[in-house]
Amino acid sequence: MKKTLALLLAAILLLGCIPASLAETKEISVMIWYRDIDDLDFSNMPYFNDPENGITATSGVHATFNQIKGSDWSTKVNLMLASGVYPDVIVRGGLDLEMYGVDQEILLPLDDIIDQYMPNYKAYLDFDPQTAQSLKSSDGKTYQIGWLIPQNINTDSHLFLNKVWLDNLGLSVPTTVEEFEKVLIAFRDQDADGNGDPSNEIPMGGTLRNLVDGIAHLLNFWGVANNEIHVALDDEGKVYSPLTAEGLRPALETVSRWYNEGLIDVEAISQDSNASEAKINAGNVGCTWRWRMSAMGTDDAIWQQYIAVIPFSAEGYQAKLQR
Image 1 (cartoon, rainbow, N blue to C red):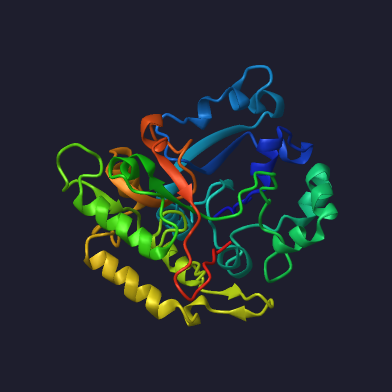
Image 2 (tube, rainbow, N blue to C red):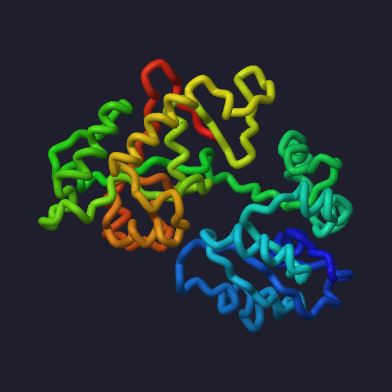
């Protein structure tokens, strides 16, 4: 079994250069996460295959892409890592670096290679030691290339409301949890999309606890900034579990009630992001958590109906986000 070269070659591909010592590799396989856009084909991009300036022509390295939808990533990457047949490069998507780098040594540490072959990237790390340290695993080694870009993206997900539905029902944008619940009830009962059938509306869509579209983000309203590992830092920098947060019980009680009253998609606890996205794209969802609405494979006529709203603070609590 060959060991994965992890994100080193990914960075090299993205930078459009390859060191002479690696140029002997004529064929590499790349497992790449991509957004749910069906016509996205990395293998046909001029960036890679332009006969004069593409990466293949200038480096002598041909990449075979295995494209994985973001919503399928966790399942397929875990199956791949369990199979023992690894790609040379893994690009984007979540990966347990402690398990597959530190413990199982499937991923290669990149520190020496970064020092030797990536002067521009290393300069970024040298300029910001705190970021460099955050990219290291528990053994002090680096198994990833950081995506260091100034996008001003500071949260895992955002809360979006269908403004067209609000306008159809003469409702204002809610500013409290109580007002938000009334909006969900109206979306459920009052033919919010105006098609004459009040039964096809889904007040809130999503999955159970996906990092992007999980309804578990609702716990944020009660100051429960939970995440996939249930570990966080408090305001004083001390480690704690969000599962011990004071607001957890009232949060769970309220979200459970909303689910039982049909204010949350009944399939949210079992469906994946593909199913959730399909309902948004069909125009059936009044509210959802999403990273963003545009450039996600959603028609303009659909995503432009939505507005982003800041998460509400439940009475007696301060809303908090995971990041």
